[in-house]
Image (cartoon, rainbow, N blue to C red):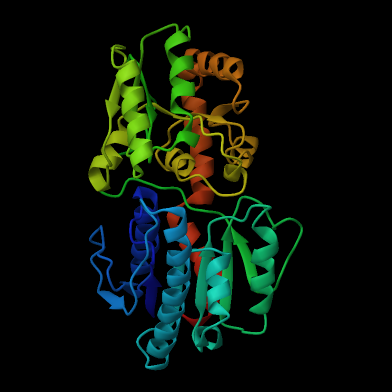
Length: 382
């Protein structure tokens, strides 16, 4: 089949790039042809080695704009989204592709869809929603319900639950998200043996990531053996960059802490993650209960035990013994659990690996894409 992947995020982070890559490469491995469609002003930030085409209408970024400018840009984004959807409908009618996947959708996409001809598509149109929180749920179900009458509109929510707030619709399916795995480096999972133990904090830096909160616990914790910490944080907003630089200056004198203040992609990102023994996720945003954490699923795919706030996808530790959690925002709980996690790390290392094998059978990228196609009504057409 010829499948269109439409990505409208014009400044994606590393996990968005890797997510699209999983879909593209796994589709290709199944024998499908994939074409990437982008807004008029967007350039692919990664070479997926597939054809790239542009749709009329520019992608809109809110970076660095005022509150009032954002109101205007929101309206412009809605208008352009409708243009993209109508263009995709026209291209489908012309036979350019047999199915459409929109990999990073929200209820706003469904709202726009209701205003366009794409809802009447003769080919499957798969909207991938990366979680629904209680605040979004009423709007999500409102617009999803409007699409029930259109048989080729498929809405797939990535979640660790079996349903969404005990609510179901015939056009909404729930599937598990994928683990992120190394794709550009030679790597195989192994039990860590070396000293010092190396912990990694990774990703786009925002205040909600609670980095300083974790660093306070790390430098005061009592470990039985040497421990090093790699802190990698790429800030996209100016205020986040200022905050990250302040934190680097504050902790620069600690020899056991290494900072990296730039974004990492591709092989460089994979080498950095593969080079640590464990991962820390002290984030406290409540949305992580409902939206899957890209970093947590990176830890799964790289077989890295982790310590995380208990608001981050708690279903994982309920089912797989691959790390530990602490009470979000509680400094005493973090310090206690961090010491326990580190000091028992080598005792549990082999058991962690066994549990990671179980988890990766469930969250393997190839399993995810097959589930995506099945839920999207595409497998039946192959």
